[in-house]
Amino acid sequence: MSPFPFSGAGLVQAQHDNFGFEPQHAMLVGADLKMAGYSRDQVPPMQKRMMDAVETIPGVESVGLSDALLLNDQNPSNIFSDSTTDLRPSNATATAYILHSYSFPSGHAMGSLVGYGMLAYLLVISWADRWQVRVAIVSIAALLILAIGVSRLYLGVHYFSDVVGGYAAGVLWLSAYITGLEIARRQPHSQGPEKRR
Image (cartoon, rainbow, N blue to C red):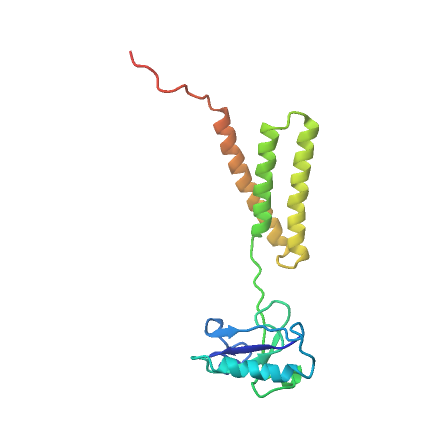
């Protein structure tokens, strides 16, 4: 993977502690020079040209290189000084560690349960007249809801408890919506204002 030029006011502080730069005062510039057609020998001069160009931007206090895009959730990122051309981890001046922030409950799990559950409910009450069609509609909705929950786990963006919590919250919302619709559906419809005598 090609290194990414990194510039910003917070890089100076980041070189003195584990995660000291402030993202609101930093500019990240990603460039994959191999995809741009640069061979192994052409990469360092191009990196130097890019860093020199970024340094000329008014307000930029420091420029450096990172071996991977900072703040991604894949791995820690090494930060190098602008004079470093050998980007081995042992030559890094600092390492930025990523703090994972999983959210509870899973909004995707909750949204899929409410959305597909409501769609299934509406189709069952308004369109499906045979029990086989109703079972098929509910089964397809359940498979979609389950697949979305499993995808959140597979992608590693939620814990199992986040997905279960999303489903629980979704069941509450869906039951509230269906209850409201059933109450409205079963109310006798008035024919308009009654005439006074």
